[in-house]
Length: 442
Image 1 (tube, one colour):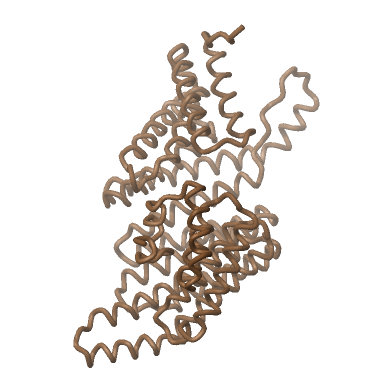
Image 2 (cartoon, helix red, strand yellow; image 1 turned 90 degrees about the horizontal axis):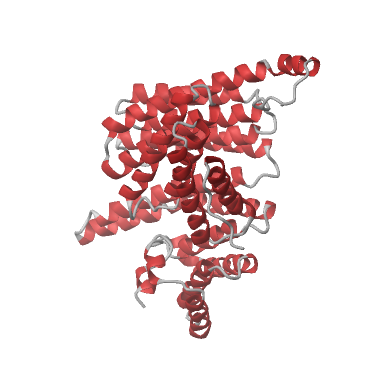
């Protein structure tokens, strides 16, 4: 006998929860997960129709709408992504109106407001609308922290009272210090985003410092999360350096990033078995290298006269000693991360990308060891395939290496394999920082 369709509020709520558990507990494809969440949203809609103004229903409905927004590519369809986020905010607002002290609803509302700000600023450069959203998100996160801290401080007393009282129901578990760290991390990210929107250095620096101070205070909350907190702190310092670099309109100043580098090295020391701080450090070194390379390349492109062109090329060669060490340090950081997480395909693929990019650089040092760099790229892409055999991305990356090396037979073999794995040319266009146009257009 086929299962009957839900007809009551409770049944619709259970169906929605069951669909969410399915995503959590089963290995679903992206489309299957999207379908399950879409059905869950529909179930919450039916539950709300039967019992409007239920705080739990509204909160979970908003949470699923927020998750659905995550499936939408903000670059391809920003309006659709914004629609999902706005619907999530609407549900969270309604839930908070019914339960003003529900930390889960408040936290998710703050996250959704911050996401809406990001979308408005990134896609429409609408800072006037985005900044108040961030300020409200910060206030909400502060409210969450205060509620969590009070609940944590009262936990011992509540436990004592519960042990002497007779009750058939147990109170909800109090928040942990881990929860407080999560909240500090979230609010620091919002404060950093707000700092990046400021036009004056004074206002921006005050906010960057506020974010750093929040994270510094959080270090006393959890020794286990020390490395995570230091990584967040480094991210604030990197954002501050980026803001200073952009607003001074001067040449690339790597010294601005030294505080962030130092903080990431602290994070590495605090988490000797963690790959994340090493990856963050590798990304930071890579960003500095790219910045210097772009600066040198622009110097060359801006000059057309042959004599001036020769001078520009000489300047690029002179910057070789400034650029190459950052690529080398990035490789070293990612290699250390790969040794800590030997089955992490993303780290191995990133190393392949870095070595391939270095092999194509218009630098004398890169040209001198081009074949060695290509061999390193080949090694890391092959290492990626060992742990991600059915992923088309490392397949086509390795094919590009073989193409550059002139290994036509190996190139054709991998191209056929990539096509069988349903790789598309559009995927390559989306990663034009990895794939050369000559290769894409073959």
